[in-house]
Length: 317
Image (cartoon, rainbow, N blue to C red; front, side):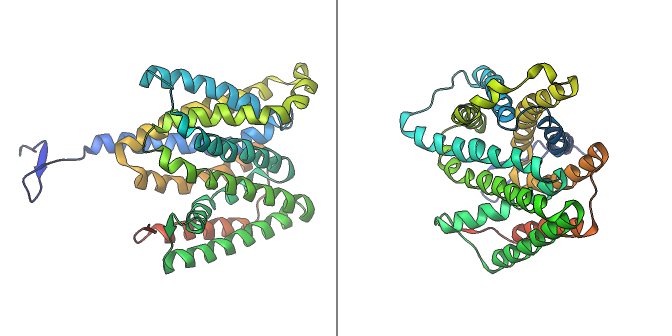
């Protein structure tokens, strides 16, 4: 048996740790579980907003989830404190990533299929790259501009296929709202960049959830007061609990734990599965009908994201 050294040495003689294969395998399994839970989220929330007002649902979801995550962060890091100078960026992140994103997301699920929402959500990386270019944070190369054009074609196919499957009027409105949700979620990544240099992702996410739900509360207050919670079934409460605990806390704990082990690039590969798992769960649990044109559009969108990441990265300024 040949002994394997704990470290290797680079050209300067500095130790370079070797990756543990079992460590990577466990991280891959964690990522697969997290992505599967996120994929199930589309069908679960669509079912939930049929019983709980779409405005009340995200306030309860992220309010409870934010409080639970705050307890986790307090235990892990010992504090939730942030500098006063960072409050504007935190508020901007919460406004974009929770308040506006959720307004579009929950109402998109009331207007179109969970399958369409899941497929259109795959446009997030492309939208993020475009926004970063517009504000001067990145500069896209030719390959990335081609991927943007290909991704746009995929969006057209998904919307067209959704119109054929569920009716042109409601599907078009729902698809536009789903794109709006992807846009605001992507835009929230921009103010996060400087914050990540000073705080953990856990602490940023905690403030994003709590502040975002607090800003949504004035709009949702009439819905909360008018909601007849006595008519919510056990399945409806289960939907809310799943969205608050599993996709609000557990998935993020799993996802960031895996990223710490294998890095964001490898984690991004698993992100390609989320949309199609969302479609599979919507078909299996909600009985949704999906046409080949929608599947083709989803494949084109995912292919465009893979194309944009296949060689190099956007040039950072």
